[in-house]
Amino acid sequence: MSAAEIIEEPETAQAEYFSIRGVSAYYGDSYIVQNISFDVAEGEICALLGRNGAGKTSTLRAIARLDEPEVRSGEIWLEGQPIHSCKSYQAAAAGIQLVPEDRRIIQGLTVEENLDLAVIAGTKGWDFERIYDLFPRLKERRKQEGTTLSGGEQQMLAIGRALAKDLKLLLLDEPYEGLAPVVRHDIEKALIEVRNAGITTIIVEQNAVAALKLADTAIILDTGEVAFTGTAKEVLDNEQLRHDYLAI
Ligand SMILES: Nc1ncnc2c1ncn2[C@@H]1O[C@H](COP(=O)(O)OP(=O)(O)OP(=O)(O)O)[C@@H](O)[C@H]1O
Image (cartoon, rainbow, N blue to C red; front, side):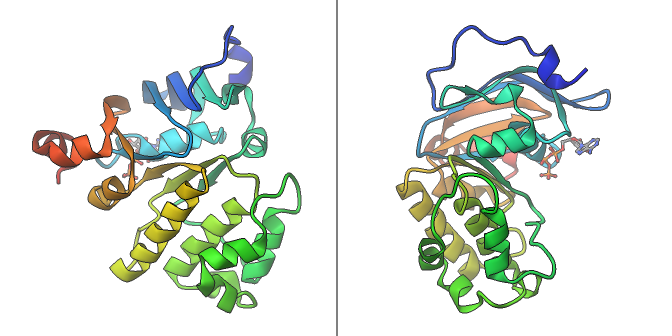
């Protein structure tokens, strides 16, 4: 039986822009995401934080409706649409784009061909010139094979690819991983522009301080459960919380 078949259709849509209600997700018999609930308002950046193994990546994968982990209960809503009943391609069509930690740049294709491929099917988002304005380095390297880009440039391409689609909710998994501070700042500036354009973002990041400085709100996960929801500033100002759940 598929996850979609065993989740009961709720009676009313959530009023919040993005909302997770009582979601539990499993790898086989392992209960990894445990009855989590939180909301993200339209146009906000939400930092999803927690120690290693807390369930952050699993939560992003559940939202994007990938096959694993399997969502067995709960509801996921985006703009009144029931994402919990979607397959991954339907969640993508609804505007949810996951930029995974390994960035998944397509081998053998140039920067521009990677962007082309993103918009081959479905509704288009930003045009390429707007993406190149956001990331001028991609414009300079538009004819270069995507997999030969630096780590930071590959991250820009992965975000650019998401923007090329009709993007409503950007899910970023460790976007700063392996990046020098100067490159991280370029990505941060771009993410602020993405927010200014009204796109909603959930960012998972080991560099919790960097994520919190960028974010409006924060969710802290601990062993698959929500341990805190509030503003990013509340976390930055609360030494005990940072010590207990983030080790910073
Ligand atoms: N494919 C899988 N099969 C079984 N268990 C998995 C799988 N992927 C992750 N897990 C387990 O699920 C738990 C949560 O992992 P997840 O990657 O979501 O955590 P995380 O908070 O993103 O951690 P990290 O910061 O280390 O990336 C971990 O205990 C992990 O071992």
